[in-house]
Length: 512
Ligand code: MSP
Image (cartoon, rainbow, N blue to C red; front, side):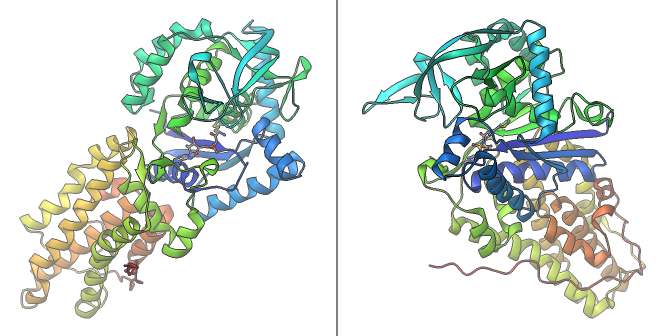
């Protein structure tokens, strides 16, 4: 079995600074990347910015800047956000980089040589905001304004010479692909949407534009730039230096394990992208996961709606790990979710401060006072101890399965349950009353420390900084974290010194 794992976020439009929706796609992808690393995989985690097309050209014009200069500035805010979110990405691709141009033009040449592209004329609707073509029946008129029924974005009429990709030809092959691999598109509901869209009939796709120049030139016709989605999707290959295979990145990591995207861009990833690849005779990705939206009230958070929540503001006020924890635990993954300050505060207080934080503080305070900050010796687990310790090894396969099926909520529920159980165990065992029974006392404290260790490891992909702070008690460094070790109940070496713990999470006072 291959021990390589490739996961990507969407590449973001640097048309305005990032918001919570972008942070969400990145944080969930980072969660999987981190888990797979501690599972022992060589992970390649990619994020970046999507810098060509009319949307960016117009945004630059509005700001009276050269497109590249404009992109340089905003792309940097996305790069900074990656650091602020503590993303463990291995690369950050910009579609204005040379390596990307080479890849895109190479893919174009292959498609053209294979007869998959032809020159004709496009006349129809185009949404600059989505950078998407819409058919007549996908467009509606409200108050004299035409917009897409699919996304709600305004559309404009376009009539120009254009190259077309023979998408219609790939309809059956795509349906076969969805049929053969029923987890190619997840969650299931999204898969069904895509299948019915493809079954309703695919038309050939316009893949070049002539009326503006901010893009990658069609190699065989200098009057055209390549359609921004064909350009953007290829980032997943260009980051692996495709078609250059010398450094083995392409060989090791393609096909991609998961393209993590928002449901708004499913059609591009689950229909157009595999069709381009099939036509070029390249392997298709293994999975496209279309997550839900972070809503503001009932609406999608987006710049055009003016309802955005700035992740930096939230992080400054409450900290990064609480935000990561909230987004991973409180949003039902795959569905839309809401974020509000009140919900975030109650999550910090109940789960992080009262539950996990409190467990660590109590156990450590007791160990400091009664065991001179040493992992106890002379232990003998009783049935109760083993019952809760074994929960981790018994559920090991389930946890791996949750991750491989992007089932974040079951993974989180498991951790939350174990946090409650561990707190209850410490209360019920009443170690403060066992000072005359040293063996029992040692076993209770050993078990409690082991539980903290196991829970902290499972929390690493969720709240890496806090998990590392907790694991630091045992001198466990990031490089040493290994998911296999949660199966081992006698991991901590008796007699070794442990360190004091800093307060992990402070309770937040609600405004009301
Ligand atoms: N540039 C394209 C993607 C190209 S990928 C080859 C694009 N960019 S975007 O900046 O508009 O949005 C990127 C992604 O951000 C969305 O697909 C989605 O994953 C995420 N989100 C943007 N707004 C969102 C919410 N309100 N909620 C959750 N995620 C959303 O589309």
